Length: 384
Image 1 (spheres, rainbow, N blue to C red):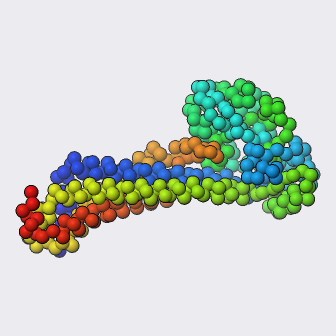
Image 2 (image 1 turned 180 degrees about the vertical axis):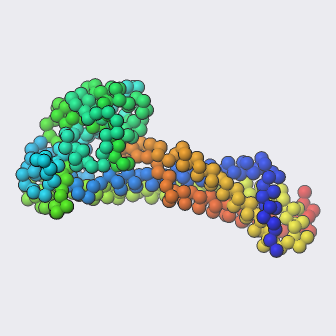
Image 3 (image 1 turned 60 degrees about the horizontal axis):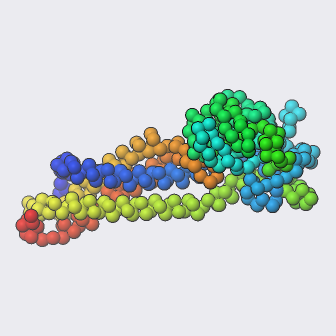
C-alpha cells in the first residue's frame, strides 16, 4: 500500500524555508539549461533561415569561406548578367545584387563602439534578399543607412541609440539612420545597409565583395559554378546560398558541441546540488521514516513518497523557470562572431529543460532515500 498523495504535499509545506531554498536551487539549474539550449537553438535557426535555395553567391576564390575578405571586379555582375539567361529578369531588371560587405568599427549616437557588419547595396538587394522587409522608415540614400533589427545587439548598444533619426559613425563618416529592417531571424538582421556607391567612396574601394543572383526555377547553380571555373582570369567561385550557410553550421559545430557539454555539466552540478539538499532533508526525518515502517508501510511505499516530494519540487522549479524563460529570455538578442541572433526558447528547449528538471527531482531524491531506508528501524527510532 502506498502512502497518501497528500502526505508528500503536506511534508513540503511543513518545512517552508527548506522547501523554498530547494525550489530556488532547482529553478536556477533549470534556468541555466534553458539559457544554453536557447543559445544553441537560436544559433541553429539563424543559420538555417539565412539561405535562399534560388540565390547563388559569387565571390573571390581566394577568400575561402570568409566573404568579408573577398574582392571581385566591379564589372562581375554585368558579366554574369550577359552570360546567363537563368537569372530572374522582371520588367527589364536583372535580379543581381552587387554588394560590398565588411566588418568595421561603428560608433553609435550614445558613444558605444563595436565591430559592426556593413553591407553596401543597391535597389536590387531587396529583390534578391527576399526575406528582408523594411519595417520602419525609408530606403537609404547618400549619407544614410538602414539598420537590422539586431544591429544594436551586435554593436553592444541600445535600440534607442540606433533608432531612426540618430547618427552613427564608421569609415570616418557620419551617417543618418533612416530605417529599420527585419529578415525573419536571418543573419542580415545584425547588419547595417547603405548605398553601394556611397560606401565605396567612404572606403576608397571600387571593387565588390560579392554578387548575389536570383535564379529562376529552371536555372541551375552548376552552370554558374562552371562559368566561374572556366573564367580563370576572374578568380571567382560560386555557391548556393543555403550551402554557404550550411558550411557555417559545420564551422560552428564545435561551439554547439561545447554548449551541449555545458548542458551536461550544469545538469550534473544540479544533480549533486539536489543530492546535497535531499540528504539534508532526509537526515532530519530518520525517525519519521522509521515510524512509517513500524506502523506497517513498506519501504517501497516510503521510497515512492520521498521521490514524489522531489519530483513535485522539481516540477514546480521547472514550471517557474519555463515561465521566466518564455517571458524574459525568448527573443533576447545575443552578440556573436557572425553577428547577432535571438535566444530561442522553443518546444525543444522546453522539453529538454523540463526533462532535466524532472530528472534532477528523481536522481536527487533516490540515493538519500535509499540510504535512510537501509537503516535498522530500531536504531532509526532512537535517532535524535
